[in-house]
Length: 259
Image 1: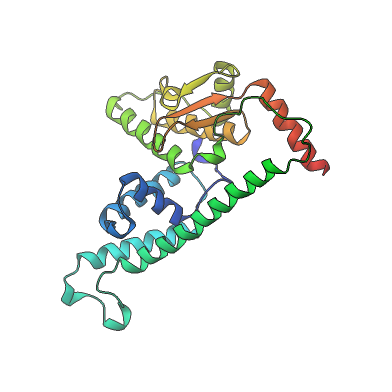
Image 2: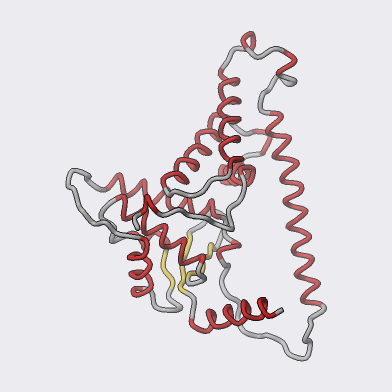
């Protein structure tokens, strides 16, 4: 099975508004100051990367892409050529999207606050207060690291690879996702951590870079790899779980099934 035959389905996948908020945060701009031209270009770059990786996209992503291109086209039109008043309630075509983003961010922040409070209450009213778990906590798991950060890191790796490699020579590598999973498990000792970029140092073709990234995603889904990011939009580090951690995860999953 090669990269083009491998369909990625990610349970941690977020929606189009999450991607737009991520792009705004990455550029460190206020929601009300967004550039439709810039955010549309960045959004379409992500959509193209998803397609390159053969990631299943919800229809909402395509609808948002069409809406952004429509808004971009309106911003390029002179004011006299704007749609009739009944089709354009605002002079600035961005406002409807900005309102959506502000409302969505309010609910997202509220949900995050309630989630934190829930965890605090769980710690305050433990089911087994007679025994405390003093073991060190694991680094931030995949579910806590945005998929958009991973895609951004992959885009940077792919861009640097294309800039530094001459594609005049044809190399028939034909790596599969299964091959790369096996290679990474053999080269990664349990508990060892590496920079995300280092996973692609031996790649000789663009196809191998893509297959390697798909293998990383699969190993994260299988709880073999832990992802952590020490700061917002900072460097991503991949660590293979220790054997003890895997045993604890399997035990927790077994308990959930029996419950």
